[in-house]
Length: 268
Image (cartoon, rainbow, N blue to C red):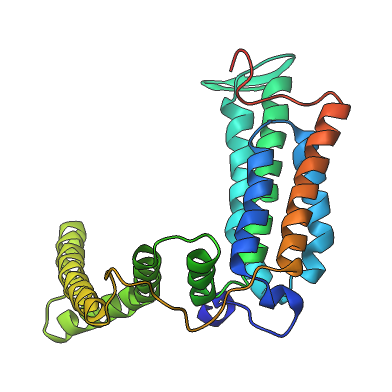
């Protein structure tokens, strides 16, 4: 499972594009789809995104694993809104607080499509992003502070160690006879003690990392250099243009069909 969730690498163009461009393209789509809430814009954006899936450079199995949370969240979101969304138009069924109507069904379809249309490009583009390349791009392209970006990168790299630390702490306590017996309260005490030990371990590791970064002149006043150049050329601008074009096409289709319904419009 961890192998399937690791960044996808390769020699295709999409793997070499600056991660900052991928973030910008995904953000353009997300912002456009948050302007209006209607099924047309979401359906158009999702259809155009699906056409680009074969060019994303992500193997089918890895893509399915990454999309699983999205495929679960979208129908659950639609179901919740269909039952508890603001009723309008013809009412089909009511039960306690749940009401199914024309308005709630339309809103449910719009929300479900938006979850997929916003989440799919994010999953596709992030799947081919290496955290180190992203940090280089944020520092060199967006000129973000190196101290903040590299600190966040180091923290992200250490997140994976928390799982291993948790397993080691659980095994160590059980080896000493400190188990989770005693019913629900016993399990809660056991989990609480392991969580506290994990917090202490994380704070110590964070302190050691901060000391190591200061020893390497992080946080100093002198400008830092980068070991690898983060370029932003034609391929990056092309990807951003594709994201903007899909966003514009979805909004245009929504306006032309009369389905455009701004989220911040009157009465909302």
